[in-house]
Picture (spheres, rainbow, N blue to C red):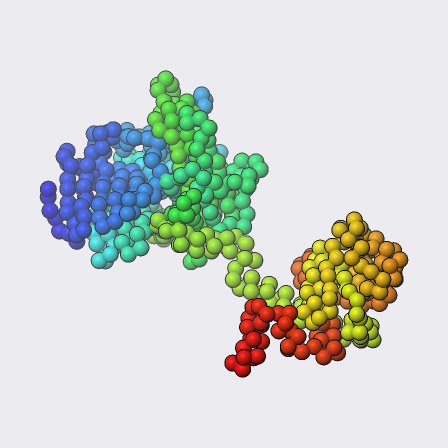
Length: 595
């Protein structure tokens, strides 16, 4: 084992890799440059074991991240391919058979195995021919250009960093041809941050040409799925990639129906919430754990998930159609983002604009990925849900509560100024001098208010029952006798279950007290005593939910109970007899004991 300076380790450029694996010790870990058995003989992979991380990088594929685990938790998919071709053998303009049809410019699929791959820079999206019949291959060439000047070093005591340079000379060729001048330089920094268990991919794109140019960058991030996991994004608009209906479970990932048939789903997200130019996403696992990710707020953001396709016939080489190109399932989920529309249509978010870069100008792009414990998953999910629905933030929810309470205060003040004082006083005296029974009847929310009045009057020694309207018309009216008082509550005064009781109650010579907001209703016209309770507005935005109207009725009932208690001379001793339990009963008993 070769030991080097633990502060800085330089990895040879791809065309001068040593034939044998090279091991470097570093503080807290090890760096290995090695050949994987399925790769071309000229290709090496870079493995770093440091503290809680195991990181695999692909120097010949633009220093793409192949895999990373943190405390044994894998972040990325098990890629569908096993082997990497030599950079000088890759021709991205080649055609694959895609579902049996030759598609020039699709050879990138035969190189797709990274967990994080930078795409572009001529075209990050689907392959196409322009007006000059020039082919722009699928996802561009930057993820297949070998990285040079690869260095592993410590940026701080708790941060290990891998730096490299990727230079783009041509729109589609992987390696420079002849005397081509460079067009783009990508300075890559991949960090392992031990304090937070975070992997950071930090790329800076610089225009090194002599003319301004548009960096059509993109990223494919393939996180590790589990059945029934869900990928969350803080967006306020979602559409299916090809215009189909968006299903309710569009955030979910599932196993394929047939492992040999690939199922791909893509949902374009727009109007995303971003902080300092970064969007926060979350892959939530069924056990409550998850993976958090932040990535650049891009013109195009798609939640991409796929499954199945092992040894399938979807992608084949034309020269070898009998051999499956993809040996393993495409089981992955995560964001696919880019500077322009993936399908060259209208999927880009017009609110996010990427400008051209002048010569020498740069653009920095950062992706951070962290495994999360359940408590942190819940917090991140709440943040994303609040961002998706601005009405669900703490401030907004508090504002809703304040609105409800202020509306209630307003309506109670109106009750104080609009109630018929003479009718109220008549009702109080009627109850205070009554020696029979009292029944209270209402349906729905009015029924809840009715139960409250029945309980409050019983607490001040006015025997009161709640009479269920449905039971009343099936014999329970027998509990009401001549001379009893019956309260009928109906907001609109026409509730069928209530008004159908009136003829029977009149036949029994009861005193009917009506509580309604409509004096001209059937209840308002038929009752013996009307307590008119009307509000201006319910608390909900549709003015439909019985909120302030119910509160006003209950406030009226509370006033009745307190007034009756005063008029009858109701005492604490009486209350102690009928309320021996609970905090109130204990307080009364302590008073009696002189405590």
